[in-house]
Length: 273
Image 1 (spheres, rainbow, N blue to C red):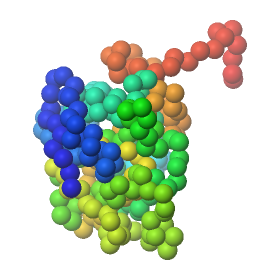
Image 2 (image 1 turned 120 degrees about the vertical axis):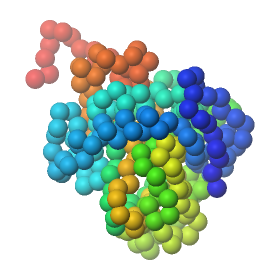
Image 3 (image 1 turned 180 degrees about the vertical axis):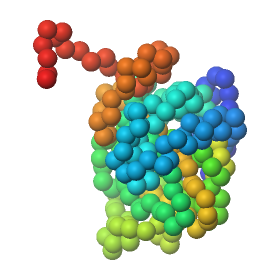
Image 4 (image 1 turned 90 degrees about the vertical axis):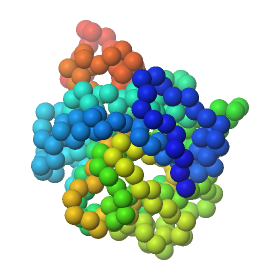
């Protein structure tokens, strides 16, 4: 079902021919042990102050946009900044999204308790340019590559992410999109879907047009995942979040180029306000 792709490294890892084959075939890879235990602990500690936020509340530059989603999480401190160009996946991101420069159009955490689930969504049949899977002239040119990093163990009953392998190339919608099974609840029981169980520190890499969602969490406690979605440098923030001046100032040049690949340019004598 999955492939062990990498372990934490100080230098970006090399993509193997098998990974390319399986990513092309299935639309996803599992990167085991991508982030070490100390870093995972730091991420959870940095996240803890924001978990109690109410819907639509801001705390500094962090925003709870949805019931289970805390957005603009890259502003939550250095542990989250370190994920921007993490060595375990940045070579994969550049390889699959293309080498024209990158942009993170969405960075958030999903914190879900018992009973929570994500419905089935996306699918190659929609042919959306923003999320597309493309391979041309022996190069991958995907519109969006997602890193879903497990901050807690997600085992049986833990509400694991579910994907339909190969659906990133589908020409027809899954019948679940037609008969209403995709409109609510979990992806469990939908034909062709597989659940990806993960240890804390594992990262699931997938092209965003793969049909995906999650199983229902049946266990007590929290399922925590960090989601960074990468695309070409000319993309735009999905929900309009803009990096703070403080974040841009403390980022390394390489990370800043991913968070703000194009510097704003306007007549300094003119004002848009």
